[in-house]
Amino acid sequence: MLRRICSGLSVLGVLLAATNNSARIPAEHATLVLSVFFVLFLWVQIYPLVMTLSGHWGHRRHPVNKMYTFFASLGLVGVLGIIAAVVLSKSGTELILILAGPTMFLGIVGAAVLAFFAAPWKDWAFHDPEDREGKIRSSRIGRAPVEEEGWMNNLVNSESARPKLPTTAPEEKQTKPEA
Image (cartoon, rainbow, N blue to C red; front, side):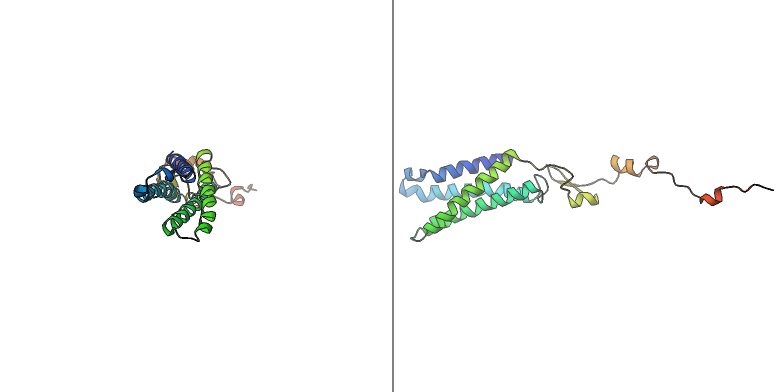
């Protein structure tokens, strides 16, 4: 849910940045207001990206999380490009703005679409390599070591679950008739 909230706030930040609302701010306060805006804008993008990479919303190598990471990183690069153009504020920054604007828009909106409408799933096509070994299990809250004495281990390792194998060879079992 936090990733959705932050993605929604990022989309609102894109709309605020793209609609030239800074023209209404007096010149003496513009630098402070824009600095605070971009710091908050960066935090709203970086926090869910770091949480995704740390495995908070499923494994980081899951296809949904990989695409979210790609789009969020793309949006972050666009925002940093716009910040660089604003800080430099010299002639010749038009190319930076031409590249950074669509990059920011594509990245932030793409990450928001994934955050709102896609979630990592567990299926046969994707497996967590650490789960296969049975040492670490991931969940939505974090990662925890698997207990050795869980009900699944008891079920698999119980005597009734194992097939009974013959202890003697079939030839020894047969008795020879006495003459």
